[in-house]
Image (cartoon, rainbow, N blue to C red):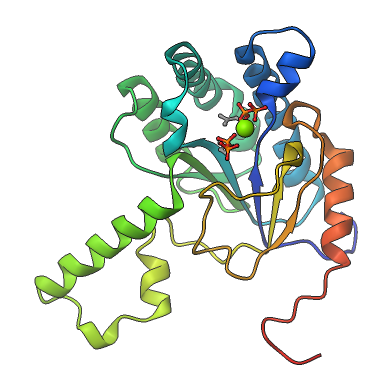
Length: 236
Ligand code: IPE
Ligand code: IPE
Ligand code: MG
C-alpha cells in the first residue's frame, strides 16, 4: 500500500449510468448494470490498495422512486443480485456492510438480501461499506429527530444531554464524518446525500460517468483530495 494520505471516510455519488447508456444507444438499465459491474471492481481496488476505512455509496435516493416503473424494477432486481452474489469479493475483503435509508417502499426481496448481507458481514473488521438505499439526507434528519424526541418523551434522554455526538449516533448509522465525496458525471450538486455527515467534506466532481470511473479515475480524484487544505475553521 502506498505511504500516502487517504480519506478515512469516502462518499461516492454514483451518477451518470443513464447518460453512459444513452451515448451507446442502450437502454438506461444497461447503464445501471455497467455501473454495478464497475462498482464491484472499484470496491475491490479500494479495499486492497488503499487505507480508506469507510465507504458510503449513494445507490438509490428516496426521490429515485419518481422514475419510470421499469427502471425502478430493474434497479431493485439488480440490488438483489448485487447483494446476494456480486458483493462476495467485498465480504471476502473482511468488510462489514451496513445500509442507510428507509425500509418502507422497498420490495421484500431487496429487504431480505439487505438483511442477509448485514448479518453475513456483521463481524468483519477491515472496514465498513455503507450503502445508501431509499436514502434521503433530509429524511435521515427527520428520522433521527423522531428517535431522539421519543427518548426524551419516555425519559431515557434528558433534553440538555442532546449533543452533536448523540445526534451523530442516532442517524441511520453511527459513522465518522465524511472526509471526501466524489460525484461522477459532472453534475455539481449533492442531491440529498449525507447532508449532516458532510459538513466539512471536500468534494470532487469528475466528468466521467460512473460505469467508466475506474481505479485510475479514483486515484486522480484522490490526488485532488491530497491537494486540499482542510482548515475546519482554523486561521491559516
Ligand atoms: C445514477 O445514474 C444511478 C441512480 C440514480 C440509481 P443515473 O441513472 O442518475 O444516470 P443519469 O444521471 O441519468 O445519467
Ligand atoms: C443522485 O443522483 C442519486 C444517486 C446517485 C443514487 P440523481 O441522478 O438521482 O440526482 P439528480 O436528480 O440529478 O439531482
Ligand atoms: Mg443522475
